[in-house]
Length: 614
Image (cartoon, rainbow, N blue to C red; front, side, top):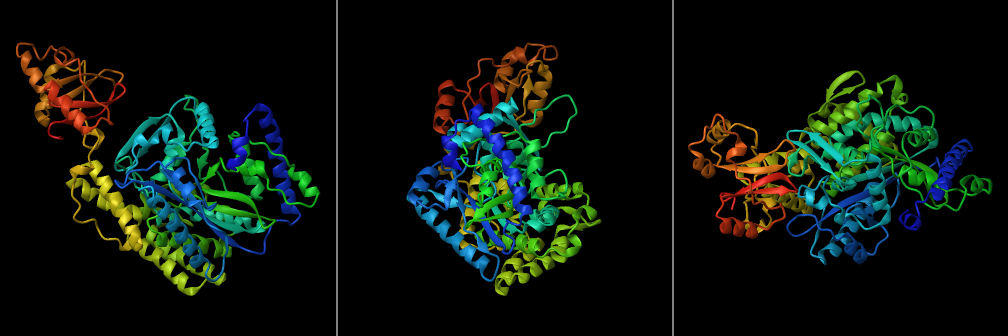
């Protein structure tokens, strides 16, 4: 796809031709289904492994292009950000040792990319969201320099008409504006593919939607973002918001999100789903297409449906229907996009076997999901799983069930039957589904991260905590024990060698005053909280001054009940940025004989650093 996009002019003429190709592709797909041309006598599985590249300090390393050049293997490709890489696994027939074979290939590919990364002093880590990603790595200078990515950002930003807004509420809250779609790069997934016969596609797709909540709940591995503890699978909220072009208005109107679960059960065929997406989402990318899919069909050839495939790649359903051609034969498949990367390869393979087994083993009583479950219930189950993970309460066929109960009593028996139906090796079934059973009763990757993150935060600063957490995740991955067996982090201490930037040691939970506050209230607040420095903002949230205890003492004669903070604050405030080196900040404080430095981005304070922090 990338080659064609590089040649694209994205012109209006190209768009006009592309639209007709898109309409033709839908008709061609319907014709192929009606004529029985879609492959239906074999079931294959496939996967895509996304991964993060990190430096020796466990922070993102933007050198994916160097590593890809070094590794020189068509299985690997770029991702949005220069600190992410994707590996595409080969498809395998669902039978016998397919999971062992796929696991072997995945390990071989990971070993290959790790060797190449090591030559550039970097490491590879598998995790849903890398804990050490900071806002610094979400700027345009970290976007992989490929026209397709720039075009996606350019068009979505234009449609949005304003900064993208991310607001996620968990144990902590994250609320900020961002000027590009690169927030999407925080998410790394293990995407699963399963080939589906065309006559069973609608039943299979609806079943895939119905089981998404409990499957996600037992696989959660992304609880942290920018140092905040949010959802158990924060990727779900983040991905939807990072590509959301819907404009907030005062009018009440419904608009379908580009990333989402869907709006209804499917009823007719896969073509219906594609038509819904084309009807509700604008065309994001175009490319030159030479061959007419309907004409190719008339000539007895199989079309690739290039326009439809490109369009479909820019609509991000969590369960995405896909069309493809392999060995000259067209096929349909469902792509499961909600499973996070990590915590280990063996955990990922267990997730894969669980989902495939559930899909393959669907009992006939679940053939008609619209008669059994309201679509909103399935959607709500999915959101509950993303938010609460293993602790979610689900509604399953009219009954309220815990995740442990639904996985162990309802879903695992179906998964066992599904894998046995396709003669998957019994030792692999027992090993992989056994991991899911233990994890449902024990802990997920998200549970392990949260427990250890909270313990670390009791002992050390936030930046050190996320570094130590990432380091422990990396080390546990090398041992490759499933996450329910991981031990707590022990013996981790804060090391000064890790600190370089002001952002790493500044205090971010700030008390602030406003310039029109009364001085007596400000003094009381400082006394109550034993605070010596308080930043002062105006009505726009901009830093306009600093109130210090030593400065207040100079105004002993002033009437504190009448005076405003603006009357007694320091107005010429010396500030630094998050990327100021600690050594430089120390020099500034010594030179001006001051006890603290506000840390600002533009005119807005994001932290404060004091002599105590030094």
